[in-house]
Length: 85
Image (cartoon, rainbow, N blue to C red; front, side, top):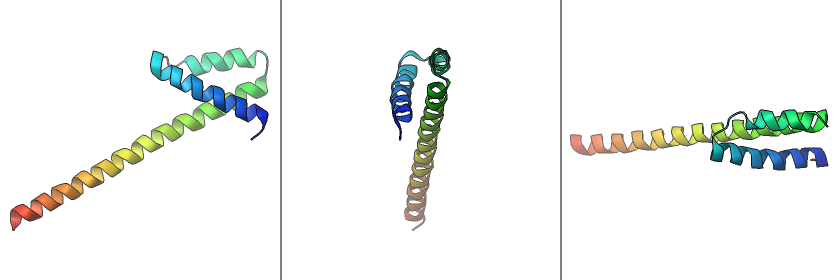
């Protein structure tokens, strides 16, 4: 990535962590607005990095939940098979 994307991504990581700590879902938009006052390019790169990282977090949580359900279903099936024997 270029310097703009690198800086925007690093800031996105920090802002997402801060959002989790303080519980402010609007923080990324507030930071982006402030950035946009001086650099629209930086603002766009930052918002893209935030969206991509948050989507990745949600997708990983979804995948983990699916795997946990699969494992639980497998255990239930094993227990049911043992009970039927």
